[in-house]
Figure 1 (cartoon, rainbow, N blue to C red):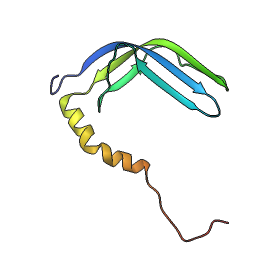
Figure 2: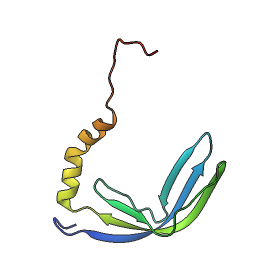
Figure 3: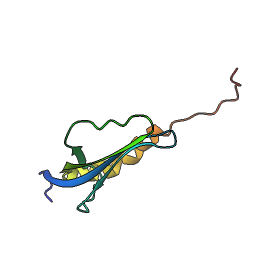
Length: 98
């Protein structure tokens, strides 16, 4: 893997979209065992998959995985914890909500 060159690979995948009360999710499983690492990006080809309420839709697609450069991977690992903490911002107050 190069320091400045990105590598693009394709992988067959299965996309599952659930729109149920107990589970609202979209998952991608790579059928060839590909693994996504910090800094990599994934683009699943094809039109959006829409699931009506109460349905789970599963489709086979092709995904393009753009591998991060060594520098991007190092940067993502170094700064990833800070970005995660932004999602965890919370505060406590003694004030009572009315």
